[in-house]
Every structure is written in C-alpha cells, then in structure tokens.
Length: 133
Image 1 (cartoon, helix red, strand yellow):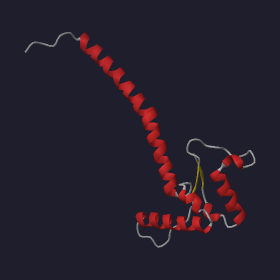
Image 2 (image 1 turned 60 degrees about the horizontal axis):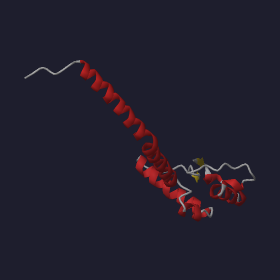
Image 3 (image 1 turned 90 degrees about the vertical axis):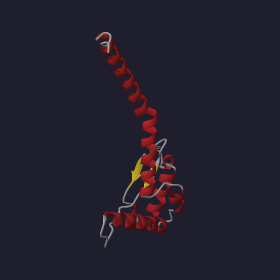
Image 4 (image 1 turned 180 degrees about the horizontal axis):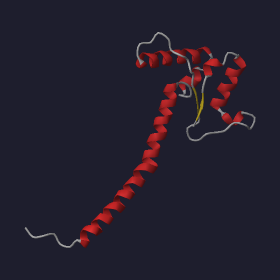
C-alpha cells in the first residue's frame, strides 16, 4: 500500500481535491497513478503536538488534530472509508501483517518444523533402541 504524508500542508483547495481523487481512484491520475492492490492508498498528516506531557498524550492530540484537518479539507469520505488517518494506516498494516502470517509465515514455518522433526526422528532412530529400564 501507499501513504501520502504531510496532508496537513495542503492549503490550496485544488491540491486537496487532487489528493482526494488520487486516494479514491489512483488510476484517474492521467495514467500516472499506481493502483496498489489489495491495500490501496492512505492519507496521513504530520501535525506536531504541543503541550503534551507523555507520548500517549502526544499521540492522542495528534490523532484528534488529524481528524480535524481532514474534515477541514473536506475528506470526511476518506475518513469514513478508512482511507485517511494514522488509524487507517495502522489498520492496513495490521491487515497486511495478518495476511502475511496466514498465507506465508505460518505455512513455511510449519513446513520447516515438520522437516526438522523428520530429521530428528531419523537421527534418533540411528541411535538404536532405548536402554531397558
């Protein structure tokens, strides 16, 4: 997936409109846009948080400011569809990670474990019968 950052710097309405179009349908970017399947694009801001005592407060402040900025830019549709905000980015990262675990990591790891188990069973069999008790 792709990420458009610094969307808080889109002061010109024309730029905000273009970004919204690119996020919703990158293929319309005069043939220059890149459709990123299956996760698409996400828009985020980089608003500095002020007067925060902890990192948790800073993240909460930034998240609230980000939603306000996107609403001010007229990106309600992107927020609703999960195409804008760091929350949407985290959600897509999580989805991609879980998909990778299910489709790649777990099957490959299980295969390697089974192969290793076979090797160990063979080595154990070469040692002969266990001593009688």
